[in-house]
Length: 171
Image (cartoon, rainbow, N blue to C red):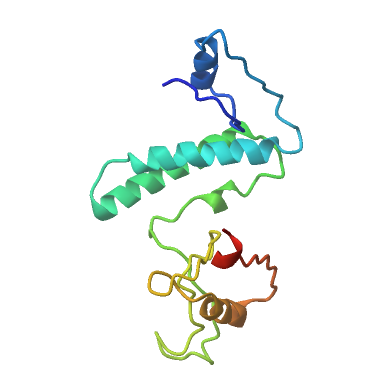
């Protein structure tokens, strides 16, 4: 794979280093050292891609595959634990992923919502742990107003950045 001309903001990997070494002599490149303040963010963003790629290739069927993925994750956490020998990091066991293969979706008062599946706070359709863009496509995505109503009911703090672009203004 040859590097395309353009702007990049990629952690320099061994593969990229090799590609830069084989680049056409008419081309040049620019790079900079990782910033000490931002290095943990930049490296964790890169590792997110690597981990996603690895977990997508973990073998197994259905629940067996999920358990295998959890095992891989827990091994990575163990490796991180041994790499950092600071007294502040004594709680690494708490970061181990439970073999129950579940996500926590809510915490609520039993008194207010006594029955399972009762009148709990409604969940938004858009994932809460990812950014979402609402385009106003009526049949293919949830309504922005309805999503806000659901999220506001459960919020203890609201931070919001909104940009409205109308089709008539984007020509």
